[in-house]
Amino acid sequence: MAEKYNNFIGGEWVAPSTGEYVENINPANTNDIIGLFPRSSKEDVDRAVDSAFEAYKKWHLIPAPKRGLYLQRVGDILTRRKEEIARVMTREMGKILMETRGDVQEGIDTAYYTAGEGRRLFGETVPTELPNKFAMSVRMPVGVCGMITPWNFPIAIPTWKLFPALISGNTCVIKPATLTPASLALLMEVFEEAELPPGVVNMVCGTGSEVGEAIIDNPKVNRISFTGSAEVGKRIAERCGALLKPVSLEMGGKNAEIIMEDANLKLALEGALWGAFGTTGQRCTATSRLIVHRDVHDEVLKELVKRARGLKIGDGLDESIDMGPMVSEEQRKTVLEYIEIGKREGAKLVCGGGALTTGNYTRGFFIEPTIFDEVKPDMRIAQEEIFGPVLSVITVGSLEEAIDVLNNTQYGLSSSIYTRDVNRAFRAIRDIEAGITYINGPTIGAEIQLPFGGVKDTGNGHRESGTTVYDFYTEWKSVYIDYSGRLQRAQIDT
Image (cartoon, rainbow, N blue to C red; front, side, top):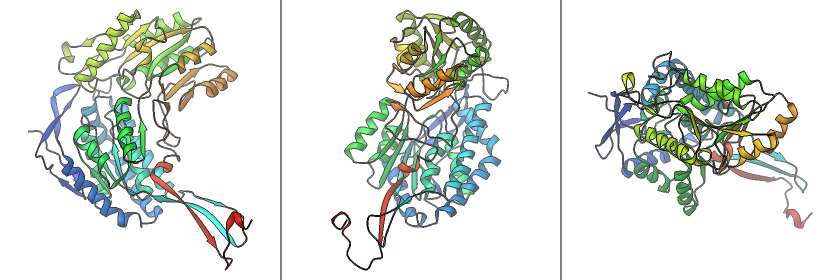
Protein backbone atom coordinates (compact mmCIF):
# COMPACT_ATOMS: atom_id res chain seq x y z
CA MET A 1 0.00 0.00 0.00
CA ALA A 2 1.38 3.40 -0.99
CA GLU A 3 2.21 5.84 1.79
CA LYS A 4 -0.42 8.50 2.44
CA TYR A 5 0.75 12.10 2.82
CA ASN A 6 -1.15 15.08 4.24
CA ASN A 7 -1.14 18.85 4.04
CA PHE A 8 1.23 20.81 6.28
CA ILE A 9 -0.73 23.46 8.15
CA GLY A 10 0.18 25.27 11.35
CA GLY A 11 3.19 23.03 11.90
CA GLU A 12 1.08 19.85 11.73
CA TRP A 13 0.34 17.22 9.09
CA VAL A 14 -3.38 17.57 8.45
CA ALA A 15 -5.70 15.35 6.40
CA PRO A 16 -7.67 17.16 3.67
CA SER A 17 -11.25 18.13 4.49
CA THR A 18 -12.36 16.23 1.38
CA GLY A 19 -10.87 12.94 2.52
CA GLU A 20 -9.69 12.50 -1.08
CA TYR A 21 -6.20 11.48 -2.23
CA VAL A 22 -4.58 11.00 -5.63
CA GLU A 23 -1.71 8.78 -6.71
CA ASN A 24 1.70 10.25 -7.47
CA ILE A 25 3.34 7.95 -10.02
CA ASN A 26 6.83 7.55 -11.42
CA PRO A 27 6.83 8.67 -15.09
CA ALA A 28 9.65 6.23 -15.84
CA ASN A 29 7.78 3.30 -14.27
CA THR A 30 4.04 3.68 -13.78
CA ASN A 31 4.02 0.65 -11.47
CA ASP A 32 5.98 2.70 -8.94
CA ILE A 33 3.61 4.72 -6.73
CA ILE A 34 5.51 7.36 -4.76
CA GLY A 35 2.55 8.09 -2.50
CA LEU A 36 -1.03 9.28 -2.11
CA PHE A 37 -1.44 13.04 -1.83
CA PRO A 38 -4.40 15.19 -0.79
CA ARG A 39 -6.95 16.59 -3.17
CA SER A 40 -7.77 19.55 -1.00
CA SER A 41 -10.52 22.17 -1.07
CA LYS A 42 -11.07 25.84 -0.30
CA GLU A 43 -11.68 24.88 3.32
CA ASP A 44 -8.13 23.54 3.60
CA VAL A 45 -6.69 26.66 1.97
CA ASP A 46 -8.61 28.95 4.32
CA ARG A 47 -7.31 27.01 7.29
CA ALA A 48 -3.75 27.34 6.01
CA VAL A 49 -4.13 31.05 5.32
CA ASP A 50 -5.58 31.66 8.78
CA SER A 51 -2.59 29.83 10.25
CA ALA A 52 -0.16 31.96 8.24
CA PHE A 53 -2.06 35.13 9.17
CA GLU A 54 -1.74 34.40 12.88
CA ALA A 55 1.93 33.33 12.59
CA TYR A 56 2.78 36.58 10.81
CA LYS A 57 2.00 38.59 13.94
CA LYS A 58 5.05 37.16 15.69
CA TRP A 59 7.25 36.17 12.76
CA HIS A 60 7.63 39.67 11.29
CA LEU A 61 8.80 40.96 14.70
CA ILE A 62 11.75 38.55 14.78
CA PRO A 63 14.84 40.48 13.60
CA ALA A 64 15.77 39.61 10.03
CA PRO A 65 19.25 38.28 10.95
CA LYS A 66 17.60 35.82 13.34
CA ARG A 67 15.10 34.80 10.67
CA GLY A 68 18.21 34.14 8.61
CA LEU A 69 19.43 31.63 11.19
CA TYR A 70 16.33 29.51 10.52
CA LEU A 71 17.14 29.50 6.82
CA GLN A 72 20.74 28.63 7.56
CA ARG A 73 19.50 25.57 9.45
CA VAL A 74 17.24 24.74 6.52
CA GLY A 75 20.29 24.84 4.25
CA ASP A 76 22.23 22.56 6.59
CA ILE A 77 19.39 20.01 6.66
CA LEU A 78 18.92 20.14 2.89
CA THR A 79 22.64 19.47 2.52
CA ARG A 80 22.39 16.42 4.77
CA ARG A 81 19.26 15.11 3.02
CA LYS A 82 20.30 16.08 -0.52
CA GLU A 83 20.62 12.56 -1.92
CA GLU A 84 17.38 11.36 -0.34
CA ILE A 85 15.40 14.28 -1.76
CA ALA A 86 17.05 14.00 -5.17
CA ARG A 87 16.06 10.34 -5.48
CA VAL A 88 12.46 11.04 -4.58
CA MET A 89 12.42 13.89 -7.10
CA THR A 90 13.76 11.65 -9.87
CA ARG A 91 11.05 9.10 -9.08
CA GLU A 92 8.22 11.62 -9.22
CA MET A 93 9.43 14.02 -11.94
CA GLY A 94 11.64 11.82 -14.10
CA LYS A 95 14.76 13.91 -14.66
CA ILE A 96 18.08 12.19 -14.10
CA LEU A 97 19.82 12.09 -10.72
CA MET A 98 22.55 14.48 -11.79
CA GLU A 99 19.86 17.08 -12.43
CA THR A 100 17.77 16.44 -9.32
CA ARG A 101 20.90 16.73 -7.19
CA GLY A 102 21.44 20.09 -8.88
CA ASP A 103 17.82 21.04 -8.15
CA VAL A 104 18.32 20.40 -4.43
CA GLN A 105 21.68 22.17 -4.51
CA GLU A 106 19.93 25.23 -5.91
CA GLY A 107 17.68 25.16 -2.85
CA ILE A 108 20.73 24.86 -0.60
CA ASP A 109 22.44 27.79 -2.32
CA THR A 110 19.26 29.87 -2.03
CA ALA A 111 18.97 29.08 1.68
CA TYR A 112 22.48 30.28 2.49
CA TYR A 113 22.31 33.26 0.14
CA THR A 114 18.96 34.37 1.57
CA ALA A 115 20.12 33.86 5.15
CA GLY A 116 22.89 36.38 4.46
CA GLU A 117 20.40 38.85 3.02
CA GLY A 118 18.87 38.99 6.50
CA ARG A 119 21.81 41.20 7.46
CA ARG A 120 21.27 43.48 4.46
CA LEU A 121 17.73 44.17 3.18
CA PHE A 122 19.03 47.58 2.27
CA GLY A 123 17.02 50.79 2.35
CA GLU A 124 18.31 54.24 1.49
CA THR A 125 19.23 57.42 3.32
CA VAL A 126 18.98 60.65 1.36
CA PRO A 127 19.56 64.35 2.05
CA THR A 128 16.49 66.51 2.70
CA GLU A 129 15.58 69.99 1.55
CA LEU A 130 15.28 71.35 5.07
CA PRO A 131 17.65 71.77 8.03
CA ASN A 132 17.52 69.52 11.06
CA LYS A 133 15.60 66.84 9.24
CA PHE A 134 16.52 63.26 8.34
CA ALA A 135 15.07 61.09 5.56
CA MET A 136 15.34 57.40 4.84
CA SER A 137 13.48 54.48 3.30
CA VAL A 138 13.09 50.99 4.77
CA ARG A 139 11.65 47.70 3.59
CA MET A 140 8.53 46.40 5.32
CA PRO A 141 7.02 42.90 5.11
CA VAL A 142 3.75 42.51 3.24
CA GLY A 143 1.98 39.76 5.25
CA VAL A 144 0.77 36.41 3.88
CA CYS A 145 2.17 35.34 0.49
CA GLY A 146 0.60 32.70 -1.73
CA MET A 147 2.74 30.59 -4.05
CA ILE A 148 1.80 28.30 -6.94
CA THR A 149 4.71 26.24 -8.24
CA PRO A 150 5.45 24.02 -11.29
CA TRP A 151 6.50 20.39 -11.57
CA ASN A 152 9.83 20.73 -13.40
CA PHE A 153 11.88 22.14 -10.49
CA PRO A 154 10.04 20.85 -7.40
CA ILE A 155 12.62 22.12 -4.86
CA ALA A 156 14.52 24.95 -6.56
CA ILE A 157 11.54 27.06 -7.61
CA PRO A 158 9.66 26.77 -4.29
CA THR A 159 12.81 27.88 -2.47
CA TRP A 160 13.18 30.85 -4.84
CA LYS A 161 9.75 31.95 -3.65
CA LEU A 162 9.64 30.85 -0.01
CA PHE A 163 13.06 31.90 1.26
CA PRO A 164 13.00 35.58 0.14
CA ALA A 165 9.43 35.91 1.43
CA LEU A 166 10.43 34.45 4.81
CA ILE A 167 13.58 36.52 5.31
CA SER A 168 11.49 39.62 4.54
CA GLY A 169 9.22 38.78 7.47
CA ASN A 170 6.28 37.29 5.58
CA THR A 171 4.47 33.99 6.08
CA CYS A 172 3.53 31.63 3.26
CA VAL A 173 0.94 29.25 1.85
CA ILE A 174 2.27 27.19 -1.05
CA LYS A 175 0.62 24.81 -3.50
CA PRO A 176 2.88 22.21 -5.11
CA ALA A 177 2.29 21.04 -8.67
CA THR A 178 -0.15 18.14 -8.74
CA LEU A 179 2.46 15.98 -10.51
CA THR A 180 5.28 16.56 -7.99
CA PRO A 181 4.02 17.04 -4.43
CA ALA A 182 6.43 14.60 -2.75
CA SER A 183 9.49 16.83 -3.11
CA LEU A 184 7.72 19.77 -1.50
CA ALA A 185 6.43 17.54 1.29
CA LEU A 186 10.06 16.67 2.05
CA LEU A 187 10.87 20.40 2.12
CA MET A 188 8.11 20.84 4.69
CA GLU A 189 9.81 18.13 6.75
CA VAL A 190 13.01 20.16 6.51
CA PHE A 191 11.21 23.27 7.82
CA GLU A 192 9.77 21.16 10.62
CA GLU A 193 13.21 19.80 11.54
CA ALA A 194 14.63 23.34 11.47
CA GLU A 195 11.96 24.24 14.07
CA LEU A 196 10.44 27.02 12.02
CA PRO A 197 7.56 28.45 14.11
CA PRO A 198 4.20 26.79 13.36
CA GLY A 199 2.19 28.47 10.62
CA VAL A 200 5.09 30.39 9.08
CA VAL A 201 5.08 27.99 6.11
CA ASN A 202 2.03 25.96 5.06
CA MET A 203 1.54 23.51 2.18
CA VAL A 204 -1.81 22.61 0.64
CA CYS A 205 -1.91 19.98 -2.12
CA GLY A 206 -4.52 19.93 -4.85
CA THR A 207 -5.51 21.23 -8.25
CA GLY A 208 -5.13 24.73 -9.58
CA SER A 209 -8.88 25.17 -9.95
CA GLU A 210 -9.57 24.15 -6.36
CA VAL A 211 -6.50 25.10 -4.32
CA GLY A 212 -4.75 27.64 -6.54
CA GLU A 213 -7.83 29.79 -7.06
CA ALA A 214 -8.70 29.64 -3.36
CA ILE A 215 -5.24 30.96 -2.47
CA ILE A 216 -5.57 33.79 -4.99
CA ASP A 217 -9.06 34.79 -3.84
CA ASN A 218 -8.41 34.69 -0.10
CA PRO A 219 -8.49 38.31 1.15
CA LYS A 220 -5.81 37.64 3.77
CA VAL A 221 -3.26 36.72 1.06
CA ASN A 222 -1.44 39.90 0.01
CA ARG A 223 0.95 38.62 -2.68
CA ILE A 224 0.77 35.87 -5.30
CA SER A 225 3.81 34.30 -6.95
CA PHE A 226 3.18 31.96 -9.90
CA THR A 227 5.44 29.94 -12.17
CA GLY A 228 3.82 28.06 -15.04
CA SER A 229 2.32 28.49 -18.49
CA ALA A 230 1.58 31.87 -20.06
CA GLU A 231 -2.04 30.85 -20.57
CA VAL A 232 -2.64 30.20 -16.86
CA GLY A 233 -0.48 33.14 -15.83
CA LYS A 234 -2.57 35.57 -17.84
CA ARG A 235 -5.76 34.33 -16.13
CA ILE A 236 -4.12 34.74 -12.73
CA ALA A 237 -3.01 38.26 -13.66
CA GLU A 238 -6.59 39.15 -14.63
CA ARG A 239 -7.94 37.86 -11.34
CA CYS A 240 -5.25 39.56 -9.26
CA GLY A 241 -5.81 42.76 -11.19
CA ALA A 242 -9.49 42.71 -10.26
CA LEU A 243 -8.49 42.20 -6.62
CA LEU A 244 -5.71 44.83 -6.78
CA LYS A 245 -3.41 42.09 -5.51
CA PRO A 246 0.27 42.25 -6.60
CA VAL A 247 1.34 39.17 -8.55
CA SER A 248 4.71 37.94 -9.81
CA LEU A 249 4.51 35.81 -12.97
CA GLU A 250 7.30 33.65 -14.41
CA MET A 251 5.95 31.94 -17.49
CA GLY A 252 7.07 30.48 -20.79
CA GLY A 253 10.04 30.74 -23.09
CA LYS A 254 11.04 30.01 -26.68
CA ASN A 255 14.74 30.26 -26.09
CA ALA A 256 17.35 30.25 -28.82
CA GLU A 257 21.05 29.59 -29.13
CA ILE A 258 22.91 31.40 -31.91
CA ILE A 259 25.99 29.72 -33.43
CA MET A 260 28.07 32.11 -35.51
CA GLU A 261 30.60 30.93 -38.09
CA ASP A 262 33.51 31.92 -35.83
CA ALA A 263 32.23 29.94 -32.85
CA ASN A 264 34.04 27.16 -31.03
CA LEU A 265 31.82 24.52 -32.63
CA LYS A 266 32.65 21.75 -30.17
CA LEU A 267 31.62 23.98 -27.28
CA ALA A 268 28.52 25.23 -29.11
CA LEU A 269 27.39 21.68 -29.87
CA GLU A 270 27.77 20.66 -26.23
CA GLY A 271 25.69 23.67 -25.24
CA ALA A 272 22.97 22.94 -27.78
CA LEU A 273 22.75 19.29 -26.77
CA TRP A 274 22.53 20.11 -23.06
CA GLY A 275 20.20 23.05 -23.57
CA ALA A 276 17.76 21.15 -25.80
CA PHE A 277 17.67 17.73 -24.14
CA GLY A 278 18.58 18.35 -20.51
CA THR A 279 15.52 17.78 -18.29
CA THR A 280 14.00 16.19 -21.44
CA GLY A 281 13.47 19.73 -22.71
CA GLN A 282 11.09 20.44 -19.82
CA ARG A 283 12.60 23.74 -18.70
CA CYS A 284 11.30 27.23 -19.30
CA THR A 285 14.89 28.05 -20.31
CA ALA A 286 15.39 25.02 -22.59
CA THR A 287 17.00 25.59 -25.98
CA SER A 288 14.05 25.21 -28.33
CA ARG A 289 15.61 26.94 -31.35
CA LEU A 290 19.13 26.67 -32.77
CA ILE A 291 19.96 29.61 -35.02
CA VAL A 292 23.01 28.61 -37.09
CA HIS A 293 25.10 30.60 -39.53
CA ARG A 294 24.88 28.99 -42.97
CA ASP A 295 28.68 28.64 -43.26
CA VAL A 296 28.74 26.08 -40.41
CA HIS A 297 25.19 24.72 -40.67
CA ASP A 298 26.01 21.38 -42.30
CA GLU A 299 28.87 20.60 -39.94
CA VAL A 300 26.82 21.55 -36.89
CA LEU A 301 23.74 19.59 -37.93
CA LYS A 302 25.66 16.43 -38.80
CA GLU A 303 27.42 16.29 -35.44
CA LEU A 304 24.32 17.36 -33.49
CA VAL A 305 22.20 14.56 -34.95
CA LYS A 306 24.98 12.06 -34.26
CA ARG A 307 25.25 13.18 -30.63
CA ALA A 308 21.47 13.25 -30.10
CA ARG A 309 21.07 9.73 -31.43
CA GLY A 310 23.75 8.60 -29.00
CA LEU A 311 21.93 9.81 -25.89
CA LYS A 312 20.95 7.03 -23.51
CA ILE A 313 17.31 7.28 -22.49
CA GLY A 314 15.72 5.60 -19.50
CA ASP A 315 14.99 5.68 -15.78
CA GLY A 316 16.83 8.62 -14.25
CA LEU A 317 17.78 6.59 -11.17
CA ASP A 318 20.30 4.82 -13.42
CA GLU A 319 23.47 6.94 -13.26
CA SER A 320 24.34 6.07 -16.89
CA ILE A 321 21.18 7.64 -18.31
CA ASP A 322 21.40 10.93 -20.23
CA MET A 323 17.69 11.74 -20.58
CA GLY A 324 14.65 10.62 -18.61
CA PRO A 325 10.96 10.45 -19.53
CA MET A 326 8.37 13.13 -20.03
CA VAL A 327 6.63 13.98 -16.76
CA SER A 328 3.26 12.54 -17.86
CA GLU A 329 1.45 10.85 -20.73
CA GLU A 330 -0.44 14.09 -21.36
CA GLN A 331 2.83 16.00 -21.73
CA ARG A 332 4.18 13.36 -24.12
CA LYS A 333 1.04 13.59 -26.25
CA THR A 334 1.43 17.37 -26.46
CA VAL A 335 5.01 17.03 -27.68
CA LEU A 336 4.09 14.36 -30.23
CA GLU A 337 1.34 16.66 -31.54
CA TYR A 338 3.91 19.41 -32.06
CA ILE A 339 6.16 17.00 -33.93
CA GLU A 340 3.29 16.27 -36.30
CA ILE A 341 2.67 20.01 -36.67
CA GLY A 342 6.32 20.48 -37.65
CA LYS A 343 6.05 17.81 -40.32
CA ARG A 344 2.88 19.37 -41.75
CA GLU A 345 4.49 22.81 -41.80
CA GLY A 346 7.27 21.48 -44.03
CA ALA A 347 10.15 21.31 -41.57
CA LYS A 348 12.59 18.45 -42.22
CA LEU A 349 12.68 15.82 -39.46
CA VAL A 350 16.31 14.70 -39.20
CA CYS A 351 16.34 12.96 -35.81
CA GLY A 352 13.85 11.21 -33.55
CA GLY A 353 10.22 12.15 -33.78
CA GLY A 354 8.50 9.30 -32.00
CA ALA A 355 7.51 7.83 -28.66
CA LEU A 356 9.54 4.99 -27.16
CA THR A 357 7.05 2.28 -26.16
CA THR A 358 8.74 -1.12 -26.38
CA GLY A 359 11.19 -3.08 -24.26
CA ASN A 360 12.34 -1.12 -21.22
CA TYR A 361 10.10 1.79 -22.22
CA THR A 362 6.69 0.11 -21.91
CA ARG A 363 5.89 1.45 -18.42
CA GLY A 364 7.07 5.04 -18.89
CA PHE A 365 6.44 8.20 -20.88
CA PHE A 366 9.56 8.17 -23.03
CA ILE A 367 10.19 10.02 -26.27
CA GLU A 368 13.10 10.33 -28.69
CA PRO A 369 15.31 13.42 -28.82
CA THR A 370 13.95 15.20 -31.89
CA ILE A 371 15.58 17.64 -34.30
CA PHE A 372 13.97 19.54 -37.19
CA ASP A 373 16.01 21.26 -39.90
CA GLU A 374 14.89 23.77 -42.54
CA VAL A 375 12.64 25.45 -40.01
CA LYS A 376 11.23 28.85 -40.94
CA PRO A 377 11.05 31.52 -38.20
CA ASP A 378 7.27 31.84 -38.45
CA MET A 379 6.47 28.13 -38.17
CA ARG A 380 4.53 27.11 -35.05
CA ILE A 381 7.37 24.87 -33.88
CA ALA A 382 9.60 27.98 -33.98
CA GLN A 383 7.07 30.20 -32.22
CA GLU A 384 5.21 28.17 -29.57
CA GLU A 385 6.59 26.65 -26.38
CA ILE A 386 6.71 22.86 -26.77
CA PHE A 387 8.25 21.94 -23.40
CA GLY A 388 9.84 18.76 -24.63
CA PRO A 389 13.01 17.47 -26.34
CA VAL A 390 12.34 19.08 -29.73
CA LEU A 391 14.95 21.36 -31.33
CA SER A 392 14.23 23.54 -34.38
CA VAL A 393 17.25 24.47 -36.50
CA ILE A 394 17.01 27.79 -38.37
CA THR A 395 19.69 28.92 -40.85
CA VAL A 396 20.80 32.58 -41.09
CA GLY A 397 23.43 34.58 -42.94
CA SER A 398 24.47 37.27 -40.48
CA LEU A 399 24.47 38.35 -36.85
CA GLU A 400 21.74 40.90 -37.55
CA GLU A 401 19.48 38.25 -39.07
CA ALA A 402 20.21 35.87 -36.19
CA ILE A 403 19.17 38.45 -33.58
CA ASP A 404 16.05 39.37 -35.57
CA VAL A 405 15.04 35.70 -35.68
CA LEU A 406 15.78 35.22 -32.00
CA ASN A 407 13.65 38.23 -31.04
CA ASN A 408 10.75 37.19 -33.28
CA THR A 409 8.63 35.40 -30.68
CA GLN A 410 6.15 36.40 -28.00
CA TYR A 411 8.62 35.26 -25.31
CA GLY A 412 11.87 36.66 -23.97
CA LEU A 413 13.35 34.54 -21.20
CA SER A 414 16.78 33.09 -22.03
CA SER A 415 19.16 33.44 -24.95
CA SER A 416 22.64 32.38 -25.99
CA ILE A 417 25.28 33.19 -28.57
CA TYR A 418 28.50 31.38 -29.43
CA THR A 419 31.14 33.61 -31.02
CA ARG A 420 34.81 34.44 -30.55
CA ASP A 421 34.23 38.08 -31.54
CA VAL A 422 33.88 40.31 -28.47
CA ASN A 423 32.20 43.02 -30.53
CA ARG A 424 29.52 40.62 -31.69
CA ALA A 425 29.05 39.42 -28.14
CA PHE A 426 28.39 42.92 -26.83
CA ARG A 427 26.04 43.73 -29.71
CA ALA A 428 24.10 40.59 -28.85
CA ILE A 429 23.91 41.61 -25.19
CA ARG A 430 22.55 45.00 -26.26
CA ASP A 431 20.10 43.88 -28.96
CA ILE A 432 18.68 40.55 -27.78
CA GLU A 433 15.26 40.91 -26.14
CA ALA A 434 15.51 38.54 -23.19
CA GLY A 435 15.89 38.61 -19.44
CA ILE A 436 18.98 36.36 -19.63
CA THR A 437 21.79 36.24 -22.21
CA TYR A 438 24.66 33.76 -22.15
CA ILE A 439 27.87 34.29 -24.11
CA ASN A 440 29.47 30.97 -25.12
CA GLY A 441 27.14 29.02 -22.84
CA PRO A 442 23.78 27.24 -23.27
CA THR A 443 20.43 28.84 -22.47
CA ILE A 444 20.20 26.91 -19.20
CA GLY A 445 22.31 27.29 -16.07
CA ALA A 446 21.11 30.38 -14.20
CA GLU A 447 22.72 31.10 -10.81
CA ILE A 448 20.73 32.19 -7.79
CA GLN A 449 22.60 35.44 -7.08
CA LEU A 450 21.32 37.14 -10.25
CA PRO A 451 17.72 38.07 -11.15
CA PHE A 452 15.75 35.38 -12.99
CA GLY A 453 12.90 36.22 -15.35
CA GLY A 454 12.10 37.59 -18.76
CA VAL A 455 10.35 40.11 -20.95
CA LYS A 456 7.26 40.09 -23.18
CA ASP A 457 4.94 37.12 -22.48
CA THR A 458 7.54 35.47 -20.25
CA GLY A 459 6.53 37.57 -17.24
CA ASN A 460 5.08 40.76 -15.88
CA GLY A 461 8.23 42.60 -14.93
CA HIS A 462 9.12 41.00 -11.61
CA ARG A 463 12.18 38.82 -11.05
CA GLU A 464 13.03 35.88 -8.83
CA SER A 465 16.43 35.21 -7.20
CA GLY A 466 19.15 37.81 -6.72
CA THR A 467 18.38 40.97 -4.76
CA THR A 468 15.58 42.32 -6.96
CA VAL A 469 13.17 39.67 -5.64
CA TYR A 470 12.89 41.69 -2.41
CA ASP A 471 11.11 44.45 -4.28
CA PHE A 472 8.20 42.02 -4.61
CA TYR A 473 8.19 40.59 -1.09
CA THR A 474 8.54 43.93 0.68
CA GLU A 475 6.86 47.33 0.62
CA TRP A 476 8.89 50.54 0.69
CA LYS A 477 8.22 52.91 3.57
CA SER A 478 9.61 56.45 3.50
CA VAL A 479 10.50 57.87 6.93
CA TYR A 480 11.02 61.58 7.76
CA ILE A 481 12.46 62.58 11.15
CA ASP A 482 12.23 66.30 11.94
CA TYR A 483 14.34 67.40 14.90
CA SER A 484 14.12 71.14 14.24
CA GLY A 485 11.48 71.72 16.88
CA ARG A 486 9.32 73.74 14.52
CA LEU A 487 6.88 73.19 11.63
CA GLN A 488 8.71 72.78 8.34
CA ARG A 489 6.65 72.60 5.15
CA ALA A 490 9.04 71.04 2.63
CA GLN A 491 8.67 72.69 -0.81
CA ILE A 492 6.66 75.59 0.63
CA ASP A 493 9.54 76.63 2.90
CA THR A 494 12.30 75.89 0.38
